[in-house]
Length: 239
Image 1 (cartoon, rainbow, N blue to C red):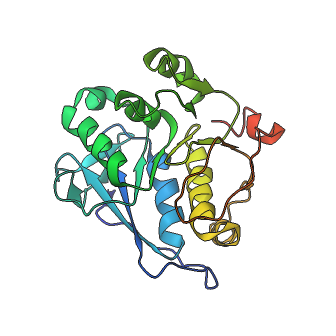
Image 2: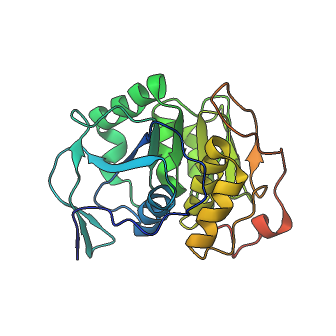
């Protein structure tokens, strides 16, 4: 199955959209978990006001979970400057040792509004030094490894996402949808995120099911601070 271009679902008709669409770059790589990629891509394509594209080290097709072939639209060197960067997880393999990828993530941190990691994608943020001194979360079985790799960070269990302002990390796989909806809520308001969740028929969306550590000066609609809820901490919802 080849995915050369993201499909766009029907957009919520009443969502308030910014005058200038925000660029959303989704890093893709062989070994990537398909829902880590597909969940946030669905959120940002359903929601008006975002221009979504895929990016990789080269334009060669990458293979997700052994059967989904994805052809990147841009290379790291040629992609438009992203406002939002999505870092999926999965089997990171040699990705953490690719200096070009790590440098690209670091460069994005200097100019992008939001870096959103999903699942083990937080490992890339850690490798780039972007989790130092921060709270974060990741896939449940990767928490100990990420904590060891980033000793100055505090890697949390039992929360769907952790928002440090520019850096947002999510728990495993389906939690990427929650993290992306949270970013939509920050940038366009909670009503826009609710409309997108309804359009996707995603019944698990709860605005305050993550941890907001701090906010930034970015244009956004603040979401109230909340610790992990019981639902967010359940085994079913944290994987």
